Length: 106
View 1 (cartoon, rainbow, N blue to C red):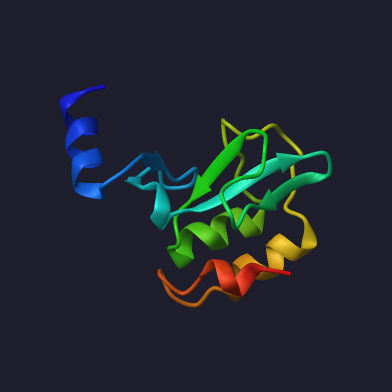
View 2: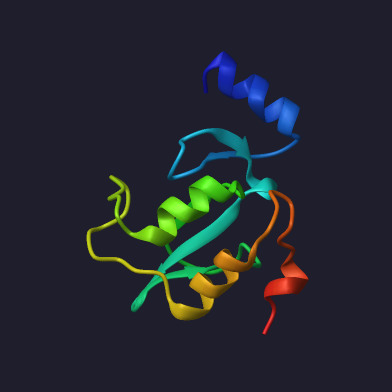
């Protein structure tokens, strides 16, 4: 762990992850987690789903880029798409802090 990573972790008060779109490191609890499933990507609102996790910041620009599907990401295998429920939930988020676990529960 580099000095910069240690500093970010101390400031965040926990684990630090990077957004797959903008690559900015942020506190894990401030990001949205997507997991790879058999049918594509699914929004993991509880942060407990098994499998490879991808993190997305709550900024509107990052969500729009991911939802558009026009850009490929090095960490995501080609052809992976969001499931319809996750796509709807991501599109419905208004502000950077507008999404909460209770909003996504079935």
